Length: 141
DNA sequence: GCCAACGTTGGC
DNA sequence: GCCAACGTTGGC
Image 1 (cartoon, chains in turn blue, purple, green):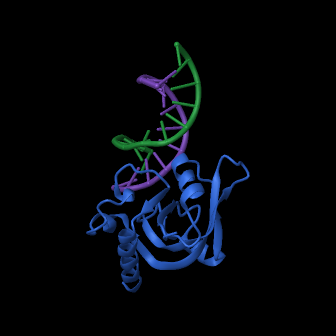
Image 2: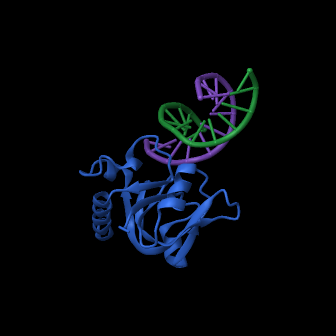
Image 3: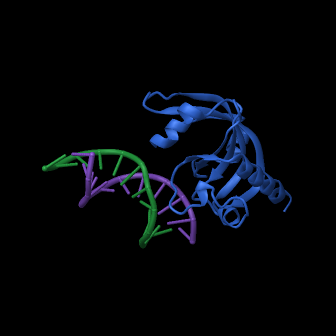
């Protein structure tokens, strides 16, 4: 199956890319939204790549990359699903929401649409590549 | 099955 | 802390 690309949001008070770097990997649980649950349960596959997004941050934006290392499996409450993700890379900075909004090729990204609260969103391959490149740049900046 | 009320998210 | 957006709940 072709690799898919995702964006996963979390508030820095809860978890950061540095926490993931320290832990190596983590189980992504506690998502209480049906759409997001369905993505995890039905569509995420091992090897899929993830943009790690810090919400309610200063500034909010993508702070690094992760990948799926375990596909969807039930939480203790089997209504809900979780996946395991592993650390890939920290940008060492943030590709801010502001930057995303002004970058060509990202106009359709769900995350930049005002009011989009979905904590897990599919990302197009082209969008993923663009953000990855921006992240590599921000590292040296 | 509609829809108003309510709660939560998240940018600012 | 404010408030707009939007998902969820519950009365009918």
